[in-house]
Image (cartoon, rainbow, N blue to C red; front, side):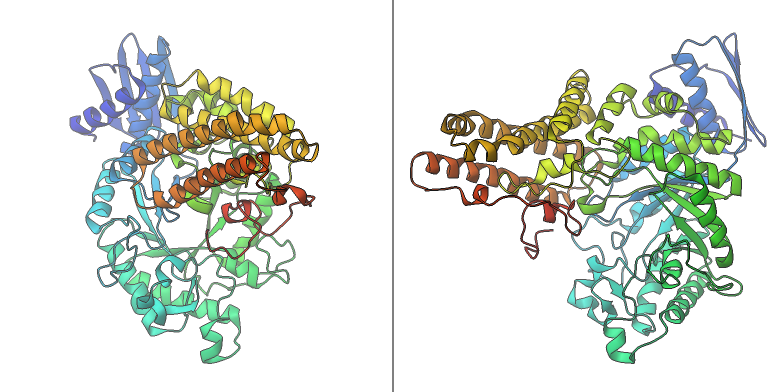
Length: 602
């Protein structure tokens, strides 16, 4: 039975988020399904747990806010465990207050699982360099979040790394004995298993969850670094299995069921080392007999429902599997709505058809966490409604619920999505923000710069109308600077080669100062949004990027002034004909700012 305090506490969160007053007397009871009834000022909610109760109160409050005279609904979970995996390793570690806000928002949709992706950003008493200067979670903070999630009957599942993606910790000399490669732990090393046990023991001390995500993805060179020097060539599939068995046994010692990313088994069984290789053959029992870990199939890329179904079937030889799709927030600065829609919807349908029991919406932060993760939450109803209705909701309903959840209007969020031309991962906008003013090393732009600039200007105009919201001011500033930079990149070389000195003088006097002002405004609004949700640790990475961009714009202005004054005979950066900019990771910051591949500025 729900206590009166449960109803009061959770109802207060729903009422505040929606800006409404809920009925004073709401009859609440426990039951197998979520039932919400409202008529003539009287409300009744039946829910299986406090997370479902929160959803019921939220939907009731939303109906009241919309002026509906009555409400009758009955819903059941089609996905027993569903929720968010939030990136907390690439610079941006959420504050305790922001993490609690996320838990509130998830609960309002009836989502009951949260993972904080922490490579090194959690405290291990035995390892003082683990998360050093990176804003790591203390054990007390982790316990506080676990308690807060438990108030909704929500699971806070630890999410760590036990093989690859360990570069942040392994950079320190204190961790040198644990290295295979610069980002991979040394398998078959007792020192490594002591380290992993200390990590698992720490998490056991912090959370109630009986599950732990142990990572182990993208360790492409496992066994090919110090391991090769120490032991010689080996069967790398067997090495993976041995390592997994040791890690899984540590997890079981501390009463955890381990979950791992599944890609390494597929890569090692693919001739192309490709996770999504349709010809990869996974042998029965590759993950142990019985399997020692649940496999997490992650896929943020495909728009074909049958592909997801085929991959889910291919996981059968690895035992039980769960699924992780993506709320795309890692293409730079703004959430990629179109790509989320195109990839997550078919994935969810495949998961429902296959009756996958745990589904995650991941919000990654590749290349410095330029996009605030909370900007992606407007599309979180894609997952919640699939869970509770058995089918992903339409875009209009997703927008309605997302706006109510976050306070960011649907029209403004759609405008944010115009940072991208279509559903593909085309990063023209990010490229324009960071590219050098005279070396425009932009990712391929099929639509052309004029079309991109026009799209940015239209989005900026929409967001200008929502300037009272910090999220919209930030997004407006992103579009404004990208458009100004786009106009500059489009025109500067042609004007220089044409000898148009009048245009160049105007550029020195007006265009470059306007870009400097716009870049500075963007940095300030970005910092304000960052500080609302994240710890200061990690902001220095983006601060350095903005500082570099501002300094380079000022330097180019000086260069043009000296050229116009006759102090420079030419502008060498503009003399050389540009070639198509196709290169490895050409849409990452360090590849956009310079053709030098070894600057170390990444």
